[in-house]
Image (cartoon, rainbow, N blue to C red):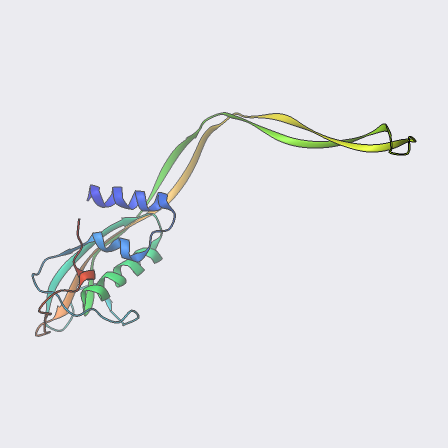
Length: 180
């Protein structure tokens, strides 16, 4: 569980976690693997065991701060990848956590360009008034402080199930096997 939270935190810091990276939250409980479903295949999300005879092939347990929509997409992505006929929700929790991020004080500078007129002698020897530009840098102190943010976390626990009698693959696909 801690490994998953740590990994998800790292993914969040990286910017955009894609759905393939959520495969680490799936744990197979059966030695058999089933043919993956199409990318947009319908997989029902159920609140209790399906009315038809089924077998649990794996568990999905993920905690994310990317919102409920991302958690749902990750759940369905992994169900399709493992060839599940349905997903039985075992737990869905929402939690708001307050974060405190310290921003250290710093100095920066802001460029300001000014113009002035200067008397210069041109190539014919005549004195002319010519504008000149110069840039000064104004120092700016940023005092820093603490940034407080409330973030909603979504925790999803679910079982992936297949219909009894569904034919397993002789050899799992490379995507179905998550290597450490």
